[in-house]
Image 1 (tube, rainbow, N blue to C red):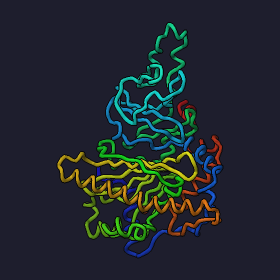
Image 2 (spheres, helix red, strand yellow; image 1 turned 180 degrees about the horizontal axis):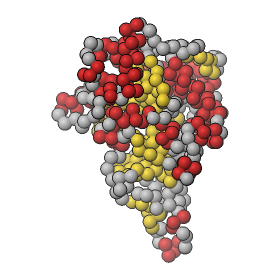
Image 3 (cartoon, protein in one colour; image 1 turned 30 degrees about the vertical axis):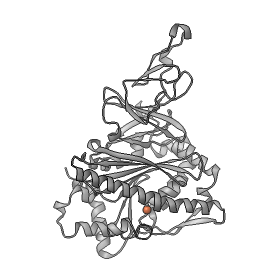
Image 4 (cartoon, rainbow, N blue to C red; image 1 turned 90 degrees about the horizontal axis):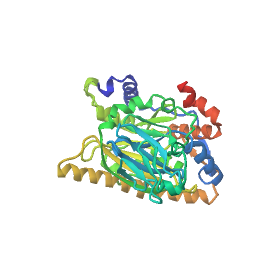
Length: 404
Ligand SMILES: [Fe+2]
């Protein structure tokens, strides 16, 4: 089955081509003002971390980062240590990465492969399913009910070759409802069979300053005039397509140019799945072709303070490159993307952060052509204003209720 046989994909691409042919675009109703303090106020930042990052399902890892039984990954989400494991049964599980004896991390490597996790402090041992398998020197330690001291499990689901999870053990949100059908489109990439080429970490400004940039094609020919825009002809128009809070961003002019007069029946998947796929609140997936078909997944997480975020750039390739030339090409592509994001997007964003921190601006603006960021800020506002019950109603029933 090709991507174009999916009616939603076909509709998006036809919509882009029609706009390009007419020289038109979709516009938001009005220019939006967002308070500058949304990017600088520590109290607002805390509401976002608590209301968004500690409650919503987040894309935590692509399957390609831990494809095999025994593979694991550790990461920190809003200060909460998370351990993702893939059991010998192939099932992904998620836990608080905190030994139930005294709390330190049971796994300390970023990624690895292990049948069991032995806490580096006193040597308590946990299984891939979180069970406490053994207490060190149990006779000396004293009796405890081991079944009550497994690692704390977190909600997790693997969809479309991506691993989604929440750091709230009692999350009121159903992951599939939250995904709003968007995962069935992402599934067309077939990421579950893709290859992890490389990854790295970059420091950036406030997570929303950084994220605004991924939803923004308006800046492409200006900020990236010497890099991206030089390599490929980039217009500044974008069309935004939403599934719940998740948005696919498509460049109408590029799409039309790429597909040209080719009959629809010959449109390839890599041509109709281009653009930027964002997953609320912190993921962007962008397609590139240097050294073979690849995507850069950018995973943004807030830092410890309002003016800081961390981005993991994860480069996945459709196929593991085998010849020297393809490998060189893929390295060159990924290195170029690091330079663009670090020296252009985030350097600009960090200057924006400093300017807003000075407190001399009341608000920033998002134009009618920037509907993607307008929608994003609307979701952020609504979600942090919602209590757990309202959030559960927005994104499905509590998992326990849904299971009943
Ligand atoms: Fe950019």
